[in-house]
Each structure stands twice: as structure tokens, then as C-alpha cells.
Picture 1 (cartoon, rainbow, N blue to C red):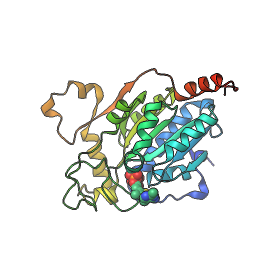
Picture 2: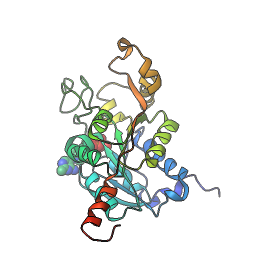
Picture 3: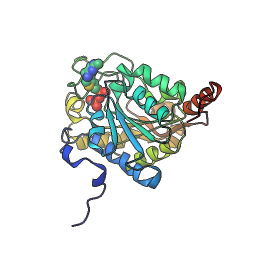
Picture 4: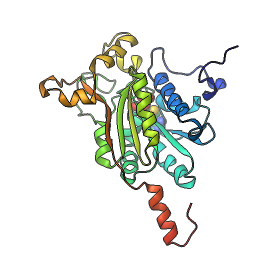
Length: 277
Ligand SMILES: Cc1ncc(C[n+]2csc(CCOP(=O)(O)OP(=O)(O)O)c2C)c(N)n1
């Protein structure tokens, strides 16, 4: 029998997954394993750790057959930081949600960026708290409905990519569940950066977000991603009046060289007279 592609990367005994029909999380999860596979021996099931917080998106770590850690809500980045500092040879990937990363975990996020910890953080942005039934997150766009915003959200949302750049991350990119090959590229390139890499993957949530906001079928939500995402190069040339509220740029936003936290920590160990990792 022909081996099904990428099957080895998933814990068969944990499937089927709990995501709703039409959810974009599976697309983003598959994009991660495609990016891992493209890195050959540098990223294998034995040298890669996947850490997540709590939420629908964070369930991905349970389905992926790597060394995985499903931590407390918002706390994936501190756990991942500990793993990376204790064992710098491991590749450490964080999977998080918009609530997990920018609400309860927002402080850990900005400080992870600031320290330039050598992690790859992939935010599955479905614009809502999916797992708990559709409360507004800090990334719910203005005017969109949530159980906690039945007349439309009045909060100004975070642009997590801007936040990551401003906080010190050294690789920042965005893509969507529609632009799968592009998403794989953004993740692959993030793996190559030595320092804090942040990739926002826009994913559709047909149940908690789409239904309440009358997006229609999951395929309509994916068409919305297709029609409103603008490649960064085109976005930069777009006249301001064409940058309507639904439109958003995708691509690489920022990349820089800066010492990563592990290197700085090694210098502390050396100064203190201990053996460097
Ligand atoms: C300390 C704590 N507070 C609240 C919760 C309840 N809770 C679980 S998941 C979640 C929000 C998930 O939203 P998000 O991070 O956007 O992920 P999604 O489910 O949309 O993928 C909340 C509030 C919790 N598990 N722990």
C-alpha cells in the first residue's frame, strides 16, 4: 500500500482531531510539517520540540508526533524558552492562538521578542477565542461580532506582526490558510533565522467567527482570505485609499541580525566561570 504523505508526522492514535469541518487549523498544521520536512536532517521528529498553550490551535501539538508540550493558556513561550536554553541543539516551535499569544500570553510574547529567544512562533489567527465559544480576542477586527461583543467589537485590535517587530523579533512574516505554499515558505524561512521568528497564519474559523459574522461556508471564508490578502511588494505600492479595512498585507515584513538570547546566556555562564552549553 502506498504510504500516505506526511502520515508519520501525526499521532494516529490521537486522530480524528477535534477541529470543526472547514477549520483552517489543519491547513496551518500541515504547512508546519511540510516546512519541517523540507529541512531534512536539521529538523526531524527527534530534534524538534513543539510547544503550545491552550485553545483549538494549541491542540495541534497533541496531534503532531514530535516531543511536544501542551502547556497552560498563554504560557507556551516561557516553557519554550526554558527548553531552548536548557538544550540549545533542539529546534523549538511554538503553536499559539490569537487569544493565547496576545491576550493572556501577551506579556510573554513581547518579552520573548525582546530577548530574541531562538524560537519559531506560529500564531494561528482565527480572530476569535475559538475553543471557548467565540469571545472577542485582541485580534478581533473592529465591528465584528463575538459572544462578548454582540453589537460588534469596539476595541482596536493588535497587529501582531507590528507588535513583534516593535518588540524586537528578528523575523516577522504573515500568510494565510489559502496561500498554502506561501505559508510553507514563510515558516521555512523562519526556521532559518537564529532568533525569535514570528509567523502569523490567518486561518478561517467557520463556527465561532464565520457563522456569527455571516461569512457563509468555509470556502467563502477562504475566498475572503484570497481576495483581501495583498503580497507585501504590491501592498507597498498600493495607494492609501485602496488600503480598505479588510485588506491586509502578507509576506516577509522584517528580518534582522541580532544576538539571540542563548548566545547572551552563554556569555553569562562563561563570566560566572561555568561550562558554556
Ligand atoms: C488561565 C486560563 N484562562 C482561561 C482559560 C479558558 N480558555 C481556554 S482556550 C481560551 C481562548 C482560546 O482562544 P485562542 O487562543 O484565540 O485559540 P483558538 O481556540 O481560537 O485557537 C480560553 C480563554 C484557560 N484554559 N486557562
